[in-house]
Image (tube, rainbow, N blue to C red; front, side, top):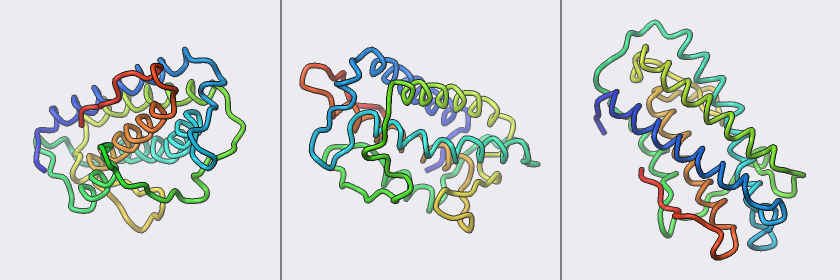
Length: 191
């Protein structure tokens, strides 16, 4: 995938703003609805969001640090890497998406959660918008970030943004799907 950096950053910004809107909607729902589990060992809406918060706790500081340290001036075109594309495609929320096993230390099932979980997610998404803005000043191809499962593998900054935001979209859809019929909103997120 090749695209203009300005187009990519704008699209990622729009997707992040939509995530904020959906999280704000979740805040309006009763706590017992957010804690309702669709099945015995499946996450409720708050657990879906808490999972994203835990990933945000790694990726937001990592992205910020790499942007601040990048010596590479901005490029006009972003070319996705092979590994980055693989990670992004594996996260795409779509009908019939296969379930993925979550790492044990990133599984929030049965955690004691409240609406502060959603408030933290919204704050993280505002931080993501700030990082997307800062990223305009560096090369999204040559600036690299570590990934959460190992520091031995790095991704292009542009791919890291794409992956994290796609991961957020996937689990936001999962959170919305836990809501009782009639309480959900249109779940399709453009990707």
